[in-house]
Length: 131
Image 1 (cartoon, rainbow, N blue to C red):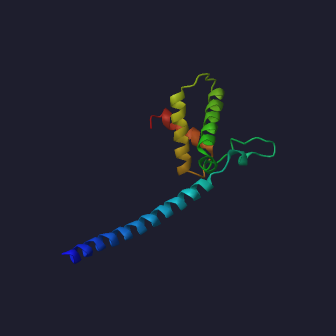
Image 2: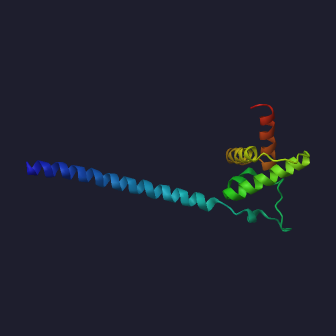
């Protein structure tokens, strides 16, 4: 009886050993993936031209999507203010603005070849048409 119990325990321990090995490989792969994703982020200051400014009308969705979240949000607020200023709107709906910025970032991640200004215009037109 002791021998069979050791056999069962040995099988369980062997299975757990395989599970630990697989979990370790999975954890290592996930860590490597997250590290490469973190390295892919670029600081907003890297898009500054020789004059010290970012040409926001030339900024691509790939650049916006690959910068840090807080930088992407900062740019989103800038775009919102710029467009509202052009439309002579002097108010801000904070929740709607945050949601709009989030939508632009999501859109840009899916459409990296577009310019951010075009992405913003597309999303504004979709919102106006009820899509």
